[in-house]
Length: 367
Image (cartoon, one colour):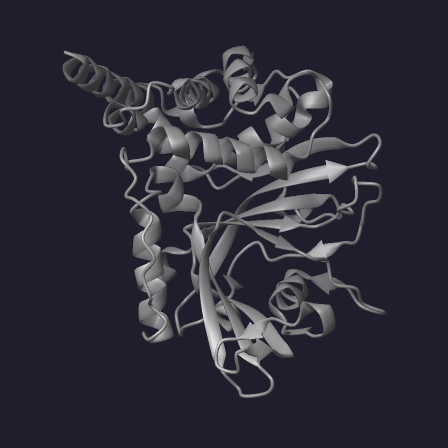
């Protein structure tokens, strides 16, 4: 009976959305704002960026998440339900309205108690907790396999990466993973014997150090190159070489083995020691055709287009979050500032306040 009920609700939800799109074309034209108290603007900023993530928005609007919730034996599904309801309300309400997120707030605070209260928090940390919570509730894997140690070191790197990705999907497989998760390759090369070992890890976002320049502007590509540059591990950092069986000076380098459909780039503006200082460096990032092929492990296309930015203005002591988002339907850009939604020019999107960048893989790069 539960399956039939959920299936019926899914059909009704899909028909409702289709009716809104056909009978009221403007209903899904602009996402409305979310009514948070002032110091919870970090939530609003991230929610606006996610609500303008085309595939995630449609996953919620069409009630496709219900299918995954129904196939999941876990009883706690309230966070995904409330997130989907919030997205649906944001896209089917008037753009002049501000919707209340109280039920969603209750669930995210239950999942991650660190967000209880009204203190300002970090938007990127909130994004990570939220995506993790949503993934756990719509994970298609209901029974995780027992952990087994398999040796893939004899395989070529490309095949090893695919095997490791398949192993990951045996445990973590959801719409959230489909969209946001990529695979990073770490190569460790012994300076003594030349042996190279590789490790493959999933990533949900990339935290990029902000490059320093004596002159000229800093570009996003500068930050990517700094993130992937070869590091020397020496002294106390010397790892043990698999071939030498001894601690050796090594070099370590990151490349991207698998690019996600949605690439989230976090600019590390805050000092890691209690966020005591902030870098306000202007980082020039492309709106279209961000070509990341030089950072790929294999020869593959990886071109992205920007669709959302979470901004942080002010200082570590008294900052404010806003969002700039490109409407998935019209392609127009909007500013989301607390309860206000206003159109903006694409020329205004780049600023020294940019903190978390959301890029979508161009259709020409999808395999």
